[in-house]
Image (cartoon, rainbow, N blue to C red; front, top):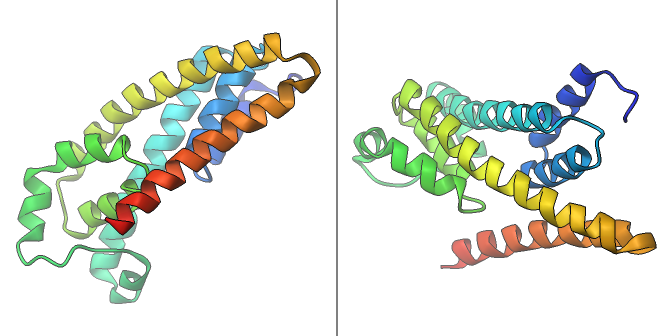
Length: 180
């Protein structure tokens, strides 16, 4: 990947955030730590990809409000006065859901469905993404760098374990939320 043009590396990171953003963040941090991509380009690509994905979820909810066929693909709360509630609490919804695994899909699509103010939503997404992604990026760079530097031949197993732990913890928290 080192010989690839910077725009291609950036595009790969952006697209990978649509699949598993935490894994994309960890792998991008490790790639930056290893010198395959600059920290600045990796982090900006992550911010762009994650924000675009979150805005896409809002758009999905907004489209489902117009086309009932799409409503079966999203989860919505069952309250009568929900539209006003989402509009009044949009910043809190975005910031809190950024830090709770599994919360963004239903909450961000609901924001779009109930027509929460888009500009407030988008600015909140950019703010929350910049905080959380930057934290996870530098934490992953630090831990990944330690794994690369200290585990020798076993470093790839250590990195796989790190990625597995991030996925497993996210799934465990999301599962616990749906059960409670």
